[in-house]
Image 1 (cartoon, rainbow, N blue to C red):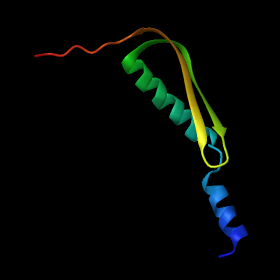
Image 2 (cartoon, rainbow, N blue to C red; image 1 turned 30 degrees about the vertical axis):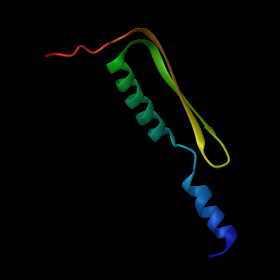
Image 3 (cartoon, helix red, strand yellow; image 1 turned 135 degrees about the vertical axis):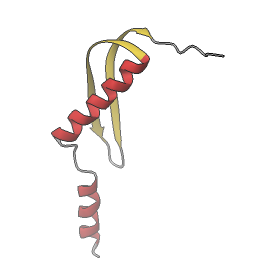
Length: 72
């Protein structure tokens, strides 16, 4: 396998997230955030692609934390 072909395969593997996947991901982060926080507004997600990895930032507003209580 040539170096160029291998780089092409690796690049395709790190392809940008499509809209369907992005919507599903944001919906899942919204669900999880609502389990731990009383949220306000929309959850947003940004993906910044670096050279060898991506930085993912999930942002939302929280009015309060939903603390768990231990039942004995």
